[in-house]
Image (tube, rainbow, N blue to C red; front, side):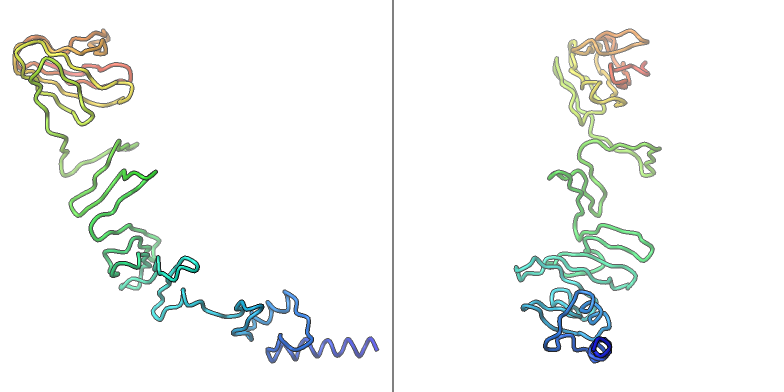
Length: 254
């Protein structure tokens, strides 16, 4: 009797699955048996408790040209599209609300593993809800501090903010100031940026009139001596200062 049952079981397991009938009446399915049936592949479609199984391609990811639409479950709206670019050597990701082209894919990944962020008008880098860098056809704009651990080369020249003219007895240096042109008929007192906050920063100061130019704090170093004097009362005097993290050190002057 045992031998008959064994032979029947062997025939059942080989013949039934060979003809792709894992749903035979009275058959107890196991995970292993079902996976084997699907992998054969002899189950192309089917359901268990109303859920599809087998080699079913969801409509949300099916496309005739290799396009994949990623949608939020139950929303019915297309949110993100992934598809090959025209060149067929890159894959692009873009929002469904735009017309795709090689210039407006949000992200492209090339065959060599190279990637690029593209935008039809502007591409931005957002960190913590704030844009810290943006790129347009005319160049790249950085909000805040740009740090470089290696040599920085500007083959097209370096442009800084326009030098403000100080025409009053007092002036407070702005974070955008790299040069100050002093033109006031009297002693001028400057409130400089905190050198501890801006280590390594440069500032050039020139006076047009024969008047003293001083710092509002004793944070200017000349040959190791710290004080508040920046320029003597001589027309045309200038000094280039650099923050050492503690004081503004005059590194060169006339």
